Image 1: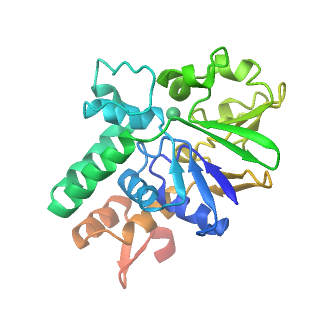
Image 2 (image 1 turned 90 degrees about the horizontal axis):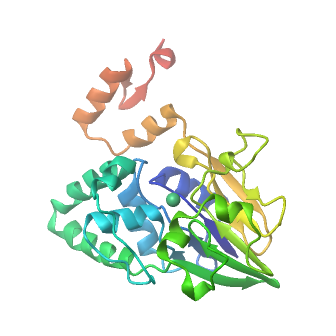
Length: 276
Ligand SMILES: [Mn+2]
């Protein structure tokens, strides 16, 4: 099977849950439509994971581009790219969390070396992909396309920053565009609480799959073979804490317990309610 996921934004536990739910294995292919990093707690884990998997193909998102800009690196596959004049943009868009994870990793020489390999790989990521399955031609990119131009003439900004122009107009003739970038709750005009995929109701030629996981929504996988939609919910604050707990040091555990008024019993963190 071939699946698409977008806008993981550092939500590593949810990514693992989703892959388990679809029973992802070596016979499957997964396209990740960019914005693997930023805002969430596990950007580096997410990057390392997708980098290590030969059957996961990633496309560049605007967050990866902001990161490359920050490190003054030019993406390989683009027709025109103007770096952000202000490198702090990345840090203000959730890149600050990613940067501190990177800096932490760079302290060890092994992971420092690995980091530079990953950065080189991010730089080389393509900006879109064409996939034909069961007679449907899918066009995948992070944010959409400028349909007034041919595929080879797309600017990097068309593929990674497109929004309303793309949503409100017909797509490419006879193709189905799959994209992320804008949480679908903002695209479902009549129900802002709907985090499921957005199927263009007017032209029926676009599917939005950023389900806003990092904002408390869903992480979704679209199966291109069956058009099945598989979702996992974003972890709650408490589930997130429990997840972080597994890898925390003793001092981090003590600080966390004190901060939430929790209690440690037999190495397990209990909330006040659970303890009483
Ligand atoms: Mn984006």
